[in-house]
Length: 604
Image 1 (cartoon, rainbow, N blue to C red):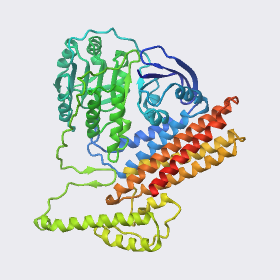
Image 2 (cartoon, rainbow, N blue to C red):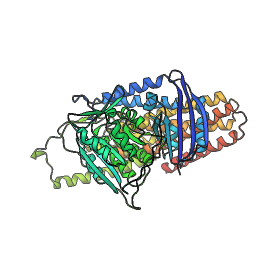
Image 3 (spheres, helix red, strand yellow):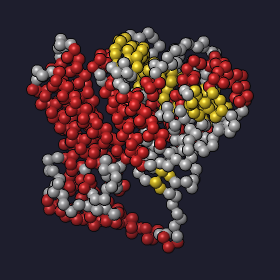
Image 4 (spheres, helix red, strand yellow):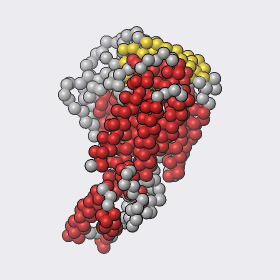
């Protein structure tokens, strides 16, 4: 049985602070723990969200929100979007690490195991609180990886249980006005669901939709198409000429809920306005998109979510997995992982999908349709390729020796890379010359001097490719990681300052160990920063492997020192803590030993 955590924001605002009540317990039973804490004022958070939102909306991707068709994606907008997102996430976590909120963090740590599946309900009527990127709360983002945070209705009531007339999951699919988007992919995926009975309404008239909601029994309502929010009122576009406010479907939806409707999915844009319009109908669960969503992102999220959910995974964990899988396309669609969000009626349990055991569900995503429009990515705008003339076409006979040359070049390059990792002046000089000649076919320009390599710094040797010339722009595929790495390093320094300030009598052992961890974190951050500058596609595979290893070590170090900060601040509140000075050095030493072993293994 999983855990349920409820955060009730009782009153307050960002100018005055919030009073928060936190309840923790097992699913389906009364909470076993409760605490009331205060979050201090933070006027920066709404401003940072508005700044991020304005940049995000300026990025011109085809979305399921009516927008300017002539909008153009600018690379600078995408980089600005990442920067604004990073600032917002940092400020949110700094707010949640406030000293007045620390007892709540301690309660959560004491009552939740890392392996627990956790539903977190955030109950507040404040629109900005609902919009915050709660999925980036470090406590649940990195420590509790089987958790998902949902927005809870500020006022709710339970629903009388309804007897099901079918063992199958009954789904009503509304494919609304599809101008400018591809909803056939949504239709294809839904038709392949196991143990489901799917009814499709393609651009229905208002009366037809109303009749289906009144006369039939549905488990899931799915809408794909355009939607919008005006003055906090949600509106969906059901066909080319008709759009409906949620208020205009009030009685039909209320009847559908009383007949057993458990989940509504709006795979469209501007979903929080729709969700707020549905709160008073007490639908058990609603999945929406917090901001305008690109068409490709909407389809991929639906596919990922349905694969997990229809395989028997819980709804919350399915949403988290689907959301995190969107990270693979964030190089083209920044902050795609921010968009899906659950809105929950706290009085109801989430819907579950029953299927035969050992049945694996695979829902293929239809191939994208061909288009003559330019494809815009964060790195570069690529126009459709022109057809090659006959003189430019290469025969297999010509390609064969070139393939051998590339394979030979790859082997020589890897040999040079190994030689660089074991630096000897003669080997480095000769290896550098060979690499420059071989990779010249791939437009590689390698520095002739390798004197900058530090024999005692393995992390510098990992990233020798940073000296490759003509690297004009950083790789946005790894950019988010090295930006976070630098931010974490700054946080670690802040932790150290707070530790010394709060506990001047800490043992020398602890401080020496802390300095070692800080040095490791800086080295890892430098490595990630440098790898983030690699632009060459040929080297990126190797570079990203090094990046991931360094990034993982930094993440572990960051989490360790965050726990250290929490315990130090708790110690300043309670001077009677007995085991602090004995436990922390052992934890830090273990982390350092682990990192040293990893470094030595990589070096060997």
